[in-house]
Each structure stands twice: as structure tokens, then as C-alpha cells.
Amino acid sequence: MRLFLFSLLLVSLSACANTTDKTMLPVELAAVNGKNQCIVLIHGLWRSGYAMKPLQEYLNNYGFTTIAINYPSTETSIENLATNFVAPAVDECQAQGMKRIHFVTHSMGGIVARMYLQNHSLPENSRVVMLSPPNQGSEFSKRFGDTSWYEWLVGPAAITLTKDSNGVINSLKPIKEEVGIIAAYREWSLWPSSWLPEPNDGTVAVQNMRLAEMQDFILLEAGHAMMRHDEKVKFQIVHFLKHGRFKHTMLSLNSVNNL
Image (tube, rainbow, N blue to C red; front, side, top):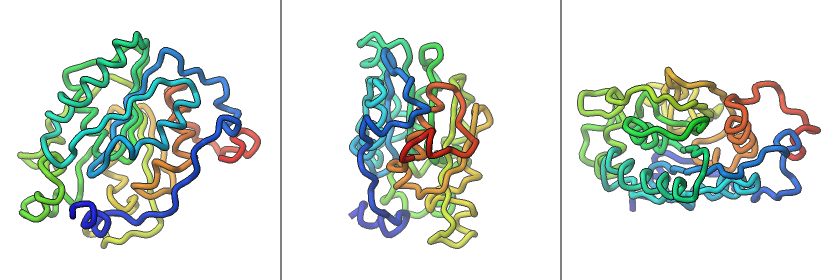
């Protein structure tokens, strides 16, 4: 029922892109070697680790070890999600002797990652890439957070994605890891601008995705849900993990093949 209402409330889906083939990797990233580097993929609200599979398969092609965690996004608090689900994944990376441990997050997963990093640090030169994170809060949680139907719909974690006194956003301190944010946007929106300021990706306003301590920020045309399948997004994730910055110049066909 929640998934049905979610589809009506927040997402307009399009066709999924095909899985990346090793022979079609962007030439510009061909030298990327993910050996001894682990990536923890953290999905968003109403999702599961399977939602991160398009990114996971792409990253595996570069030799990264990947762990796509599953967490019950509508059942408990942000803090409990970070403690009970992110921490074990990091421990697993460490147990495998990984020298660098990165986070790649989507939507609310970015807030879960920030919560984990309030009391933990990643190994030196580890990086965090966030896809459309509600870093400054969710306009929907701000507007509807005091209603019982919305709380039932999104659960105790998403209900706190505000800067209100009972929200989690203002309690989060800056993190020291290098953070890159990929902000999706669409030329159209299902919602009036009074509900969701433009530009937005259909779920999160671009103005709410930014983070004061971010290393880099890039805006790409895509929808909130389907950005996980977008080839430009995948390219930029790997570029940031290698260089600590995004590629802001126009990508040429020769440098990225079918990108």
C-alpha cells in the first residue's frame, strides 16, 4: 500500500537503462582501479539494496568491492538505521582489509550516511557521493510532517527530515570526508512551486540538496528515482571517487563512448 501511494505521491518513472558492459566503459575512466576500495551503497526511502543494483554493477566493473545494504526505511529512526545497518557494512569492508571505504547514497540515504559519520570516520582518502540528498530537509516532511497520514506513509525516519525542533537536520554537524553531490532536476514538476520549489527532481528541491562542507556539486537533468540508472550520473560518481571532483566540462563522445 505504501509503495502504491508513494508512486502516486512522489515518482514518475521512465524506462530503465541497460546494465553497463565492460567493453563500453568511458575511455576517460578506463584507468580507474577500485582494488582495495570498498563502496557502501545506501538506498533511500521505500527502497532496498536492490534499488542500487544499477550503480553497483557499474562500480563493480571498475574493480570496486561493493556492499548494497538493506535497511527498513519506514520502521525506525535515522540514528538506528545508521547504527544497525551502515556500521555493519563498514565493518565488513574493514574485515576484508579495504584501504579506502566510500559511501554512495541516494536520497534519504545521504542523511543516514551523515548520521553515521557524526561519530565515525572513514579511512584516509575515502569519499562520499550523494545523489539528490535532502541535506537541508524535505519540503514534503516540512509541509505534512504534523499529519498522521504522512507519518504513517513515510515512517519515523523521513518524518524528521526537517529543520524543526523535532527534526534531525539541524542536529547534524559537518563531516570531514570529501563530499560530492549530484543534484538531479527536471524541466517539469507534478507539484506547485509552493510545495516543491523549482528546480527540483520531482521529490527534492535542488536548493535543499546542498551541504556547506561539500567538495563539489553538479546539476544533471534526471528524475529523482531514475537518476540511479542514468549513465551521466554513473560516470560522475566514478570521476569523483577517483579525483575528488566532478567533470564539469562538456563530455565528448570520444571520451565517454556511449555516455
